[in-house]
Image (cartoon, rainbow, N blue to C red; front, side, top):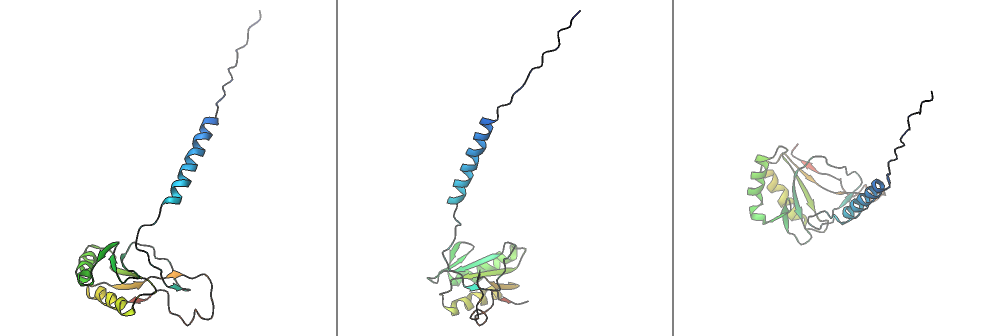
Length: 151
């Protein structure tokens, strides 16, 4: 008596459509990532060799080249800055104000904004700079990357 063996069914999974979808998703994400622009105010930060990145989200005051003041991307007048900063600092966990000012602004305006931040009970005022790649002898005469006051 001869038994007929079980026929093995060969299954084949075609992964070509899966690869097509993965490549389409990859192309989609690559294209959309290139068009994402960081919203905000157009400023050129001064450069410093000793700059270091800040990790946490802080209250940020921008001063543009045209001497316009922005508080967290909202334009604000110098007269209302102290009051709005006081409100934001009361509700904020971190009481540090970051000043991002264009390198061509009037120094007096930057000092006025820093003074208003301190009057609004900020624990510290940090001046934001851009990290400079190359080190030269002129860099050591220029200033520091961050200026912290009130600590």
